[in-house]
Amino acid sequence: MTDRSLDLGQRIASTCPVCGPAQLRVLPFRYVFHDRFLYGVRCESCSLVFVHPQPTREEIRSFYTEEYFVQCSESCGAHGRHAYMEEVAQSGTERPRAAARLDRVVLQQLGRRGRLLEVGCGPGFLLDEFRKLGWQVLGLEISPFAVQFAREHLGLSVELGDIEPERFPGAQADAVFLGDVLEHLPEPVGALRTVRHWLSPGGVAIIAVPSTLNLLSARLGLIGYGMRRRFKTLRIPPYHLFEYTPSTLPRVIRAAGLRPVWLRQSAVPLGKMGLRGSPLENAGKVTLQLMAHASAHLLNRGGDRLLAAAIRPLDETLAGTPDA
Ligand SMILES: [Zn+2]
Image (tube, rainbow, N blue to C red; front, side, top):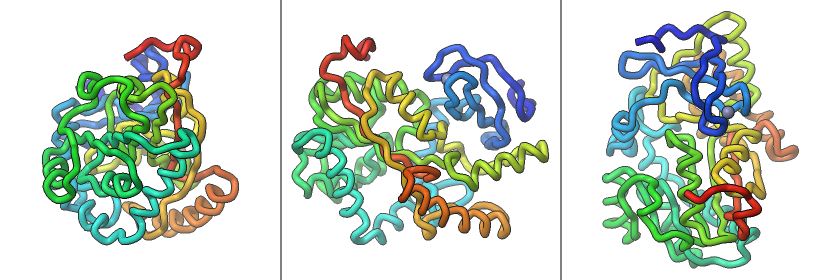
């Protein structure tokens, strides 16, 4: 397999989801997955960071079995210290607060509640909170386990499947929420075009993503690996196919014909950090995470979480983008 032997810093001619044909630069991190290396690369034109080559569709689908939600191990499970289902069971007042915050962001842009679609709603806990706030809710989810849970335990209307335009009528949703979804999708621009198709003109997409590479600790870590001419090798499935930053996320949103209108940074609480390094690396990470909290809160910089709002323009001819 030719991609086994990419060198750190090497330039390769390939394709960027935003720019099309582009030069990509190999970064000092890679995944070992199914006996091959998948490298972190950065587009030299738009700076978007993603995994290259990407896992196959079948491999991506295989990530989100029941084990993803109920286990927590090196080879399986959502990020964080506990399994996804355990984490949500323990989250107490956190989830209603998260839903209320997202609700405020949508209301700021839209001025009213209406029909809300959550793409990648998982077992539906957050969607349930949106329903309590007065939204008419609908979910879309790729995991059969999660869909069954949402329907049977929470009585939610959730479709099983991929992000395809035909799945829902166009121009029907007033708000679409994608929470920690975009980084898992192999074609983020196409997915957001479909989201735009589902949104009514003037409707709002709310997108939450991790932004690990925006973190000072992550940047210093990569510089360190680069200087030692070494790769940081991650032995977990490549759940995150894209790593967004405050500059690249709006580019991806614009490429899909949506208009970014708001972006806020925050930092993952210390108790929820994924600490997979050596004790020294972890101590450094915790210290820098405290700084990231202050910086994100006070300056809207250096956070490792991004929350963006984007509008489907009322006049799409002015936006100059073809329909999905
Ligand atoms: Zn690019």
